[in-house]
Amino acid sequence: MSYSVKLEKLAREKQKSREIVAEILRFGVSEQQKLDIIHGICLSLEDNDTLKDVSATLKKYREVINKEEETDNNVDDNKPKIILE
Image (cartoon, rainbow, N blue to C red; front, side, top):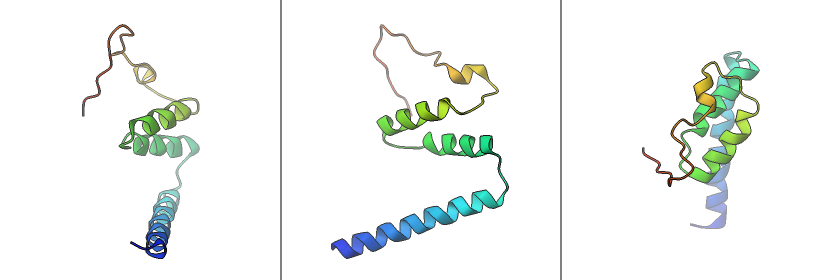
């Protein structure tokens, strides 16, 4: 695939992303709802390192109702961590 074809495909994908954002904003969402939406999308990321980084950053700004959501009850620092899908 040539560079110009890749660039064109990337431009189309970015345009689609902007359209999705515009549609979400048409709903009249609050700042907290925006953060919750971003968090929900973040949880679907396939790159685990990216997911952790974005989630950790969002944690500073999100208000949670369920305080259990803030902590990982499955963490035992003495055991290796296993991620299940």
